[in-house]
Image 1 (cartoon, helix red, strand yellow):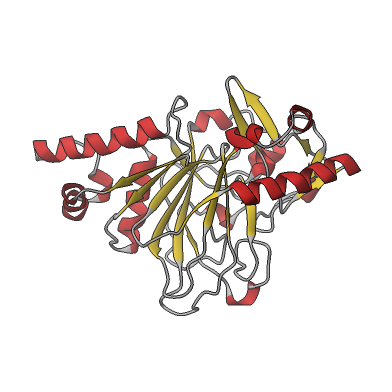
Image 2 (cartoon, one colour; image 1 turned 60 degrees about the horizontal axis):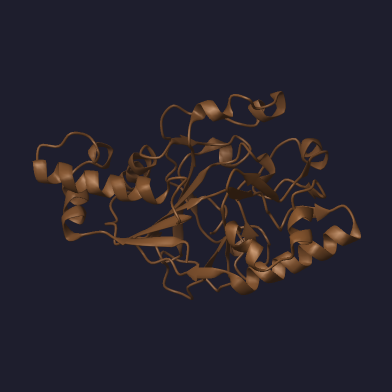
Length: 313
């Protein structure tokens, strides 16, 4: 499995509980605390480096605090790997988004659904290569009902299951992308855009698969897409989020989805927090005029304490 699991130590739990999350990686009064924070930082940065064999890290046992402190903890960890980013086309560029199932959309194929599978995808793949480099998901309440599976597939493993011909086909612009339901913007831009689902970046692969919104432009592409869906479905790993889990994915490498489930729509409803991270805000300066208008970069984190009815990972 391409996910590294890192249980939070008792010492790190105490450090998080005793200090403001915004100061967690700043110089501390305690030399011991400084070493604990530094070790935690090194685990995250090394696991998510380009050279790493892992496509994600799952940090378990993080203490749950107030909503504002939970948001700030995500931001402080985000600062270790890049810049937080919000997209104006999605939830008004809210940085830390609360993700919960919606009773009104249980059969939707969007993230607000629950009775249907959320197919494998890279978040905001239609914006590739300007979509987020990392996706952070923090489980502050795993819910009291049925626990769904969050599926994970490393795109670098695809070559194990497909022919060379199919692999090369996936590097061609044979697929058209529509905007995902959660993203509001200029639909005409999306419908004019053809993308390659697989991109070769040196010795590694990147993906802009987004099965809910991809449309093949010919019969062969349609057949291949069906085969790829089946392959990924059969060969994905999975995790079940528990309260206190923080998962950070390499968004352009690790496809993720979610199995159908039956949530409880009460105070124990499953709740994740999501934060998009780009390696550098400067990487986004080449956006086209349309994309600039559809992207809002914020210098500081913004909070929204209401449960947003958005994607459920």
